Every structure is written in C-alpha cells, then in structure tokens.
Length: 102
Image (cartoon, rainbow, N blue to C red; front, side, top):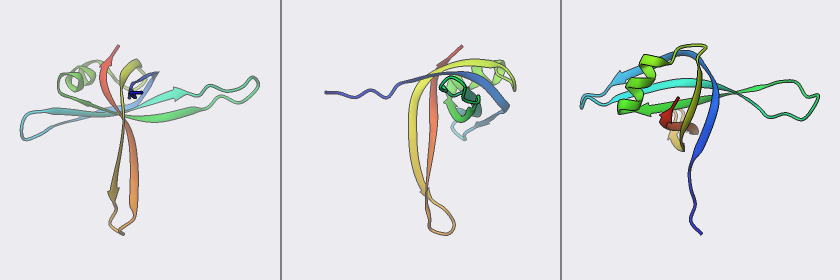
C-alpha cells in the first residue's frame, strides 16, 4: 500500500506574511493560519495556529493577496523537520508546505 502526504486547511491568516528572497532569486513566504478545531457539542470553541510555508510563485501570490484577517483555503503537504538548538536539545518543527491556495 502506498501512502499520500496531502492536506487541505481552511482558516484565517494571523499576522503579516513574511517573505524573503534567496540569493538564487527564489521567494519564500511564512505565515500562520488559525484553524478552528472540531469539537464535541457543548465544548468551547478553540483554534490551532498552523505555520505555513510557500515557495516561488505561490509565495509571491500569497504575499500579494493574503493579509491578517483574510480567509484562506490552502492545499499542500505536511513537513516535519528537526534541528538541535544552542543547548544541544533536539527540536521538531511541523509546517504545511503550501502548493495551492484560494
């Protein structure tokens, strides 16, 4: 059986889009999407803050159209990376690599 890494999220952009361009001219955008959790009846409403990462033309388009408070539907894949902090502790980061959005 093969596996598929695919995710679709709907939510509200929180904060500004942070865009940078590499020395090779590739754009990278970082932003956060606030997504409402599915809760059982009577439970309080809660949200998850999901970090998003976009590259190239997608990053440039997001920068032009997304702003704090705007509603987005994003499609992409889940990225899980690790690194060692300054104290030698392993840290894990989970982000969504955005491939398409509306």
